Length: 508
Image (cartoon, rainbow, N blue to C red):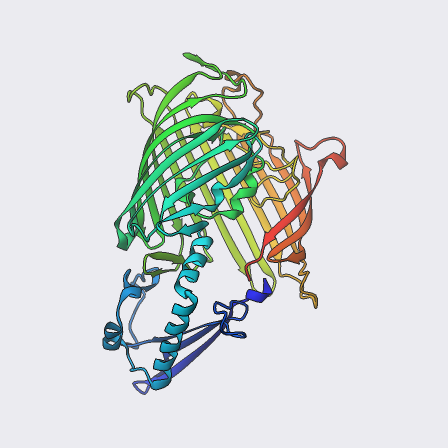
């Protein structure tokens, strides 16, 4: 959205230190939001942010080869926005001049008159997927969703806001699927134990659904992940799950997060699926129970972050992000007697190529050990068939739920060229080249009442995408063509071609 384009100006000032070297001592920044007018009283006014950073205590000629630097580049106190003017007068490097004092007085007056603080709070909440309503807030993503299994899902999610409790949250939700005609509901809560490392203790209880063969990374739950929503359109097979879980998570270092969880689940199969192992048979509708422990580690190599009050803001990284998950069942607790282990690993990275574009890849690997029903296997993420919507990091030509594996590997890559500069604002064509390949195996496929196929022969596809052919109000529309080749290709070449719509969200 060009009207809300952020404009940034940076000025560095240098001093000649110890008669040896020029070194920066002050960094001034100015950010302008030309289209963001927060005051009705200022006809042509818009938001401008200014800041100054001073560099002190500089030592030249120091050997830093053995030093390790903190990934947190900026850190402010959690109550910094609550400090009074006396505190800032005592800690400010330079005293304010008359013009600066007048600026603060004017901003305070406008802020009170226009309720600026409330507007900024609303903006911050919406970016997190919430709508604030005083002491509570609504979860935007709970209003409506769609899965091929559930059909349209309508519901409501409500949770406490920071206005009520700054270090704790309690919430709940319910939803109804138009295709499976079933209600889902749940409740959750968490408390921030150690703010400096964002250590959270959380618990949840829910009667909901779990994807057959899907992998759920707990560390990625709860955020406003618009990019993951299109994958929901292609979830065809699910099981009923009643879950009680408690988890502890926190940052070991600013860029390494560890999560430990324990859960007790009651599962029942759907869609007439039955499982027969050497020592048991479980039919659709039968209930069985599972106790499980989980450990997840997320490491974004060389990631830089800012701690601004109670917010952790990632500045990104040019290095890979690695997420590893290990799940282990525990037998002998309650009625839990199913023994298994599940291991999953993802590696993803955005590699910028100067003046050309960027190369993006994601590697997904998974392995399931033990005599297992199909929901504990590993599904190949296919988004072919209905909807014809392009979904990154998926097999674009593969129909959903085609392949499962007890061990599986998939590699997704895209090379995106820089957008072409056009004189029209309604278009900014950008070309991306797509390639994906996967392989896997499935042991004991005859134990399941539905046909089970694995990618043991190797699955391959390539594609070309034209993004942002049409841009309108922050959304970009494009078109892409994908071709399946290799062992799973059909004899008729035209049947291996999949044409899809490309949808992008442009926030600048």
